[in-house]
Image 1 (spheres, rainbow, N blue to C red):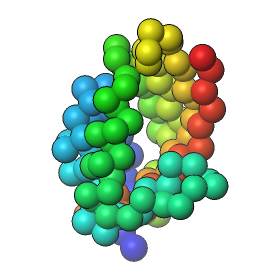
Image 2 (image 1 turned 180 degrees about the vertical axis):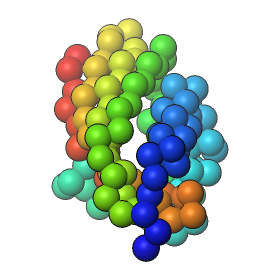
Image 3 (image 1 turned 90 degrees about the vertical axis):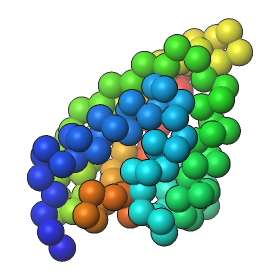
Length: 122
């Protein structure tokens, strides 16, 4: 496995947060390998494949307005990057805040395994 460097993960993370802020499901899906797995929470079945990820992002971001996301690289371990993220958006007129951690295992710049752990306020 090729070690993941800070710059590569930072670039991927910036593209991820931009896709979220703009609600661009195609840009989000393009960050993942065709057969990637996406674990939204530890207790739900993972999404499997780029098309499932695109559908999830289309449905999820459709209800979010005025989205602002920031993410900080916390660690790198071989091919996996870990980041803390905070997000705020408006859904149905109410402000929602998220605070969480994500891990993304990258191969050749594409995420092949993604996991999130987050909590909401609002």
